[in-house]
Image: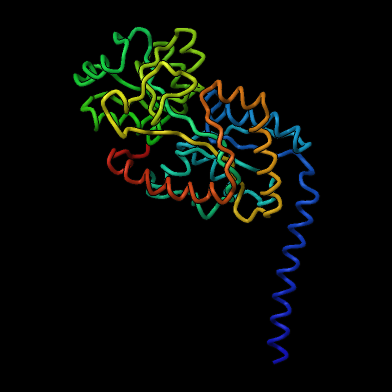
Length: 324
């Protein structure tokens, strides 16, 4: 009986110590710079979002937020780094729909589990893709594109096999009977560069990477992939309203920490990141790039990730996409 009470007392003491340690960590957090890993190359939508948030978050945390680009394997390399980092709040990651919801169905073996290995902090924003064409492509509307795309005349670039841009293009091929050839890159920044140079013809891309070029006339916007028109380009029709009801492919972005990061630290990060999102300058800049601000709770973001994994599992299987 004494041993039983002693064991129970030890467990209670251990739990109490854990809570006390977490509280102490939160009280002293942050005491040094925070590493903000972006699992993609510079220049893309994830990089733009992280750097915009990072500047304001530096002010709110009182410590430098250092953006660290770690591209490769459709985002898996950077995500894996954070999944196995110390859960102390000093390493966080800009998660994306591809590496959280699509990759689990695309790769037969993942180096991390998107649910088990992370502590969701908040969904930052969502953004529909926009179908853009190089000005040399002889079409001026989505409907005009469809007629010629069915003859196999065009190719489209993406940030990589299994990316949202890739699967969106394959989804259109399936629904519209088009035969656009896929040209994968190792990041959206490289893909946009080649698109601007006329080396590829089309691309399903986030507004943040393409909107300045659309406004300057260097790219032509043909359609958006969201359920509704985007405030960033209200004159551009949706694919759904152009004859394909129900067509929707929306990208989303969020911040996560390693699993077992103390809840008080997650709460501090959540509160300051949401404050950064609500800052008028940050909000205006992100809205101007086509992002729709979210700022969900950790619990809401966790549930959303799980639901998206199920949704995109069907899309990946239907596309027949295989990792590079």
